[in-house]
Length: 92
Image 1: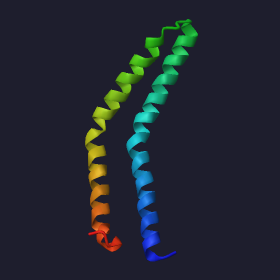
Image 2 (image 1 turned 30 degrees about the horizontal axis):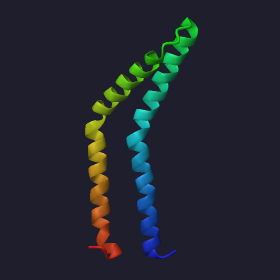
Image 3 (image 1 turned 60 degrees about the vertical axis):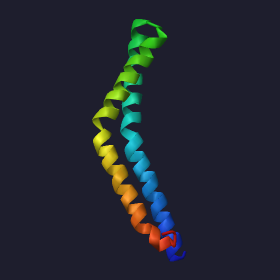
């Protein structure tokens, strides 16, 4: 592989890692809350549809708000990294 191909591969790998770091916590919290609500519904025989949506929605919103500053910092760092590597691709 040439140097340019290795740099593109590194950028793609960093993009996937950044995406996982940004979306992972929110998805995991949504999964855990969804499982807990489903377990509660199964144990109590309550089959209200909105009961599963509202707790997940609030949990995801709360985690998103709590992690907003670190997520923006992560995006800023990744953007700066990409912009600093643009001259190597001849796209400056």
